[in-house]
Each structure stands twice: as structure tokens, then as C-alpha cells.
Length: 278
Image (cartoon, rainbow, N blue to C red; front, side):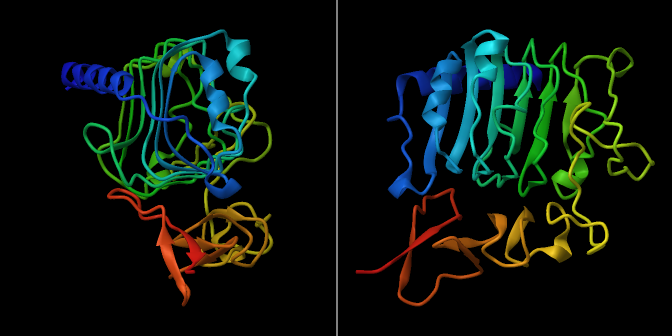
């Protein structure tokens, strides 16, 4: 399995290097960007500027930089429609500062064996650090051979992947050598009563249905419109962090309104931006 995966990743990266895409640009200045492959070093992250949604997948791989260089970047990214891959990006310790708002990975395309989140051979990573991530809609998680990576047992991956079976978390830093200390504030609990967190600063966000007493508009399903995914800032369909179905002029909807057509649709992607027909 591991040998096959390593060979597979090598082939993927070689092909990606040959077939380089045009740097992603926001479509119509609305923050929707195309798939992206970050190589060589953290300076390439600048291509993610203003990206709110990546239509496709994001790979950060075979890159070298200092920890401070990686920390120089932060983006408003909330959604990836494909998969997120981290592979041999040296100096990268956490995604906490880079993607503090990433809420949803849709998994409308996978890498290798139906993985929507893959973290492999990241020698300097100490925590994954995605404090806003609440949903991986399709696909599994594979986290393998990261010698310094902690805070894996303090995440309830089943809640993020909606109970998907087959997540693989192996050969990372032994849990007894990890601090795995959650913030002093009260974090959500696992079914075993253990605190859930991404780091010693960030609790895991778990969607619950006890409103309004326990809801701050961030992670309670009943406080948000049924058109929302991953939380909201208010009760309406314009207040969603991410739209469950489609978005039209900032409004989350279940279907395309009359007089509009689907835009940015590909073989893999089912998240649409809608515009009026002319």
C-alpha cells in the first residue's frame, strides 16, 4: 500500500511538473480560483491571494522553506471542491496561519484510494492546524509517516468525514511523545469524553443542535440556514461560511434561480457560481 502510494505520488508530481497550469486567477474578482499545485517554496503561495474557493484540488508538495517563510502567508480560503494534499513540504509546521478559515473539503475528486485529505512525509509538521474545518463531504483521510506530527488523536475524524470508514492515520509521532494538550477553555468532547482540539490554542468545531444557549453562530446547525455548511455568522442564507448547494450573488440556494445558468462546471465539480443569461 505504502510503496504503491509513494510511486503514485511521484508519477502525479512528475506529470504536474510537465503540465504546469496557468497561475490561478480569481474569476470576476469573486474569489473563485482554479486548481493549484504549489511547488518549490512558500513564495508560490502568493498565487492563492484572495482565493475564497478553489474549484478543484490543492497540492502543496516538494517545497522547501523556513518556518518563518511559511508563516508569512494567510488566505481567506474557505472551500476546496476537490482534495487537499500535503507532501514533503519542508519547514511547514502547521496550516493554522495559512488557512485559518478552511471549512469544507468537498472531495469531488480524490487522490489515490479515495482520499480527500492526504498528509504524507511532512518532516517538520507539528500539527495540521485547520481549526475551521468541519466537513469533508466525500472521501477519506490519510495521514502517514510524519515524524513530528501531533494532535491527531485529539481530532474526531469521524465527525469531519461524516462517519466514513477507512481513514488511515499511521507512523506519525507516538502519542506518548506528544503534548496533545487542548486549550484551557472547554472544548467539545468525544464519545469517550476526551477533549477535541487541533492544538493547544484551537478547539475542534463540532456541529451541535443546542441553540441558542450553546451557539455563537459558529458551529450550531439550528442557528444557521439549512443552505449552510460549516457554520454561519447569522441565521440567513447570506450568512453561511460555505453554501451547501449553489451560490448566487452571495445567496446560498438549493437550485439555480430562473433566468440563470450554471457556471464553472467541470467533470468533477458540482459547486456552481450562477450568473444571469444575456
